[in-house]
Length: 103
Image 1: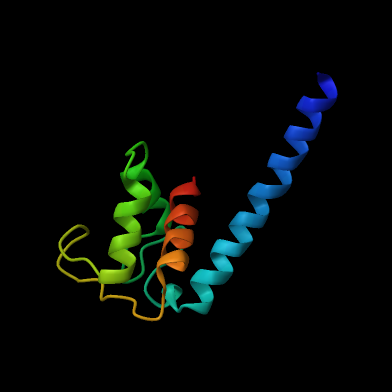
Image 2: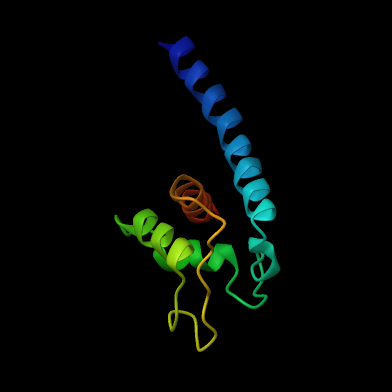
């Protein structure tokens, strides 16, 4: 039992940083960081603020995936977020999941 728990703990501790690196790399490659930053407002909100605002909402990944692909307006103020046409559905879901994982 201890070996199983130890193996699980090691897997989780290795997987979490990998997901963070993958999410950040994807955000950089899709030019998301032109308007967003992880921990401070740029043109759009900080990703950590987005994670905090939607924490615990069961449909948050689907909702953010949709906003990434189609754009959004009025949630964070008057500046609209344009649709990101260079992001496909799988990438948008990966970005949404990554953003919501930030603390």
